[in-house]
Length: 513
Ligand code: NG6
Ligand code: CA
Image 1: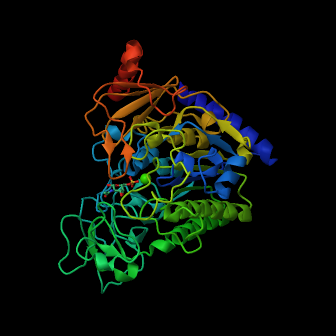
Image 2 (image 1 turned 120 degrees about the vertical axis):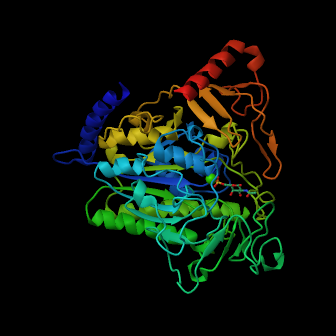
């Protein structure tokens, strides 16, 4: 039923897109760019109200020319599962092995799965992933050939082009991988990677803190040293290929821009998944941003994130394709201040509130874990400039909504959790998704419905002392009235036993679907 409606939606949309663009015949499909920030909190962006002391003008422009959401949720409060949900349309908690991936993880999205890039490809788009990946590579953990063609890879799950960081900025191997091969590798100096044991004779953050020239770890992150910073995991060799943290924003932006230019020249519609490294740790911003926010490296990384958004928009403008490009900007999960390095983030935070008015943050079941910044811009598609949508929505629906947009029927059984909701995504339908499921690192799932938030009982720790975040776990059921209590301070489960039962049974039925 929903998918049939989707088709009607596409026809209507095609017409209005044409009208807006003043064109002749045939619907013009927009280019699609997803800018997926890393750990960017709702309150980190100045477009979201008075939480941020850092101004992010490029994201502000996007919001002023598009629709900004106040209740959009990623599926999970960490990266790997959130990205899995986005790219597959399947809740990550249904699939074992979708937790935070080590840097030598095997491909978590298996080639036989139908993915968002597969779907865009089927619609005739040229597709690319640039930036942070964190969804594994190769067939078997720890068995990748880092010195050859790393396969299976992104080309096996629908991406025509890729230029990625294998995992995260704080995990080895600290190299870029372009179309399955490490960039700039000297064959005489092969790369070795291990998550099991250190390499004999190689310095580590733990044993050689005197070699840490930039940041010291506050917790974890005391293994291989690259660019004066110790990481998670050990590696050696590949010296010529190692990234320089200060340059990551430029390198990946340049590749994203090149891809956009190439696609525009060939007049093929394109789909770009652009995962920024900012504002994940280690935060080592380029000298253009260093010291500019007054909030230390975390604030500077927010400026760097904003700059990347600006470069993408400037490119679209200069090519004359900004109007008919659908840009979706969000973040994989909520914010964290100290995520493992002594970078001054806690000390310099001042009045800045990354989590806005919400409780929790990255890793958490509380709202700040999954309620992320979310902005959509597409003038030619009739997205109203400056609109604010409070509609409850989920990243899980991006897949089916884009399928609706490009007119592809998702094969039976694929992207099973994704529902077409294009009109909501474009800020025209301001009604809520029926419910949204949120996942924390404890594996616990919460449910938001009709303004209520439910977290089922679980035995996970309540507080992560290292990162200073309340995880939202409790052995008793929790129920919050988000309309009155967005900060989830008053557990009213005891006053609404019937509602608690209903929410639990809703969760159970989603699970057993
Ligand atoms: C944690 C790391 C943290 C970060 C996170 C993944 C430690 C102590 N902490 O395990 O620094 O890398 O994993 O972040 O190692 S995410 O945004 O990619 O999910
Ligand atoms: Ca993240």
